[in-house]
Figure 1: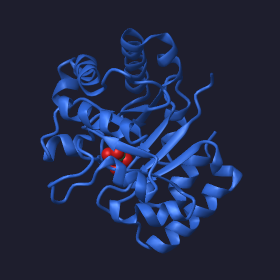
Figure 2: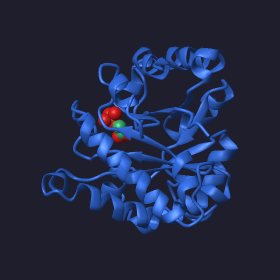
Figure 3: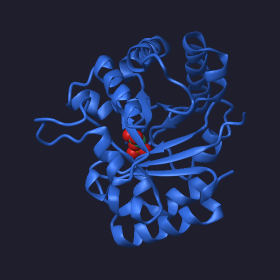
Figure 4: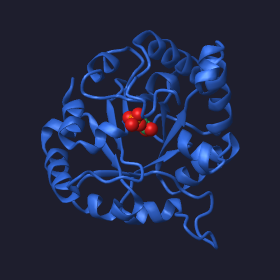
Length: 246
Ligand code: PGA
């Protein structure tokens, strides 16, 4: 099976300068053949999920709670994301791991909650600068993969996003050899745990300062199946330029 490329925009707690125009342009691209393949997904703040989904844009949440409902002020559950029109959810982003103390164990519980609601989990992993410089990048990511991805992962319910923490929002993506080496290591780890079939089909995205100037090179790498794009996804023209790269 050929892995279909996936381009995911992560708006974080931001909006494009002109959100209405951005939604119009992405909606047009989403229904046109150009952006129909690769899969194009936008993960806006939760308040905009229903609006984007209603315009025919494939949408993901940026997090979900482990429980389907309950006394958790400020949180949102996987079934609620589905109700709003989401099909995907980003889990374990390094910003949430850092500022919401999300451990691998919590991320794994969230993945189970997402699957139960029929959401595809986009599970993020990535090393710190210190780990990279200490030669521990691959082992750090392997540990995260084991802890964050629960049993039952398959290509249909899980996407892995490799996002080196030091590259996110820095304007400096990881180098092509660094990305190639890590993506191959991630696929090997998936094969070890879930079998060759899952490893061959699961999508592994790169994220961390991906933009229109470096995306072609990154997307051309063998084990890279798409991108998780933060800053550049807020510039709609640039985001769609990346989505249209073949
Ligand atoms: P960036 O963010 O593209 O702005 O580096 C990527 C991400 O954090 O998902």
